[in-house]
Structures are given as C-alpha cells and as structure tokens.
Length: 206
Image (cartoon, rainbow, N blue to C red; front, side):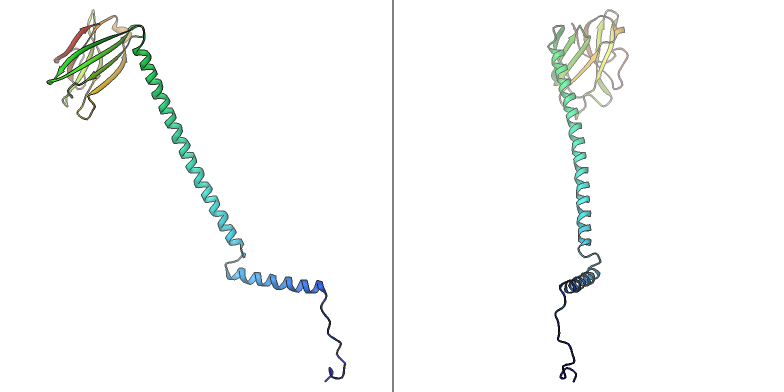
C-alpha cells in the first residue's frame, strides 16, 4: 500500500563499478563450480597433462638421438678401421720390398692355390689360400718358415666347412727366426705342431 501512497523512492540503476564487481563475482563462482566438476584447476589440469606429455616426448627424442649418435659413431670408427686396414694391405702388397710367390696345391682331391706376399723390409707376410679343401675336425693347415736351421712355426690356418673357400692371414716373422729362405705348409693336428709331422701341402723357396 505504501507504493500506492508514493512512500517508496523511485528505482535507480546501480553504479557501473558495482555492476562490474557483481559480474566478476558471478563469473568467478561459475569458474569454481566448473573446476570442481572437472577435477579442479579449470584448464590447469589439461595444461599440466599437456606439459607432462611434452616432457615425455622430449625425453624419448633425446634418448633416441643419443642412441643414434652412438651407433653412427661406432659405425664410423669401424669403417675407418677397415679403410686403414685396406690401405695398409695395399701398401704392403705394392711395396717395393715385397716378393710374391704363387704355388698350385691339391688337398683332398681339390685343386687350389696359395699366394704369399713377403715383405723383406718389414718382415711381414700375407698368405692367401683359395680353393682348398676344408680341414677335418681334428686337423688344420700349418704354415712354416724355411730357414737354415730348419722349419719354424709361422701360423695355423684352419678352414672349416662353414668358411669360404678363400682365406687370408697376415703375420710377422719373429726376430728369433732369423733369415727366411722359403715357405711350406703341412696338415697337422688342430692345435698345431712344433715341427712338421703331417702330409706336406707345398714347399717352396722364396
């Protein structure tokens, strides 16, 4: 009834700053309700998960990169070693002090050959065998230095069934062997012999 009597003041619009505070409070409360509904933090949870995913991916990429770099480094070192070995062999074979001896051999009815590169300057030999029969399980091919004092052990070259028909070996002449005038090969027990006892494959002078 007081309104009809004109006792209530006329309604007024709220001040702008008051309206802004009320709207801000309502928005903040709505955000709090949504954060509770979705596990807290509003979008912070999603941001944390995304950041964790980025860290995991970065760690995995770093591990892969380290493994790849290590593998490439090992491969580079292996190739460098192989290249150095090839260069050493070529220099050895083409050296002015290297003599080459070739002899045809027959082993177990199979025709093959043995090539010897003997460097008198460095006292190193490179022996290459091809087309030779594989050794029996208890036998091996043994190479001998021929000297004025008899035959001295040089190397054991075992050729098994699963090996290729071409085999090469490089070795040096020990200082106590003295002057070498020839080479020989025999078939000996698998562990080798102190002196030739088995069938002789070849015997030649250098």
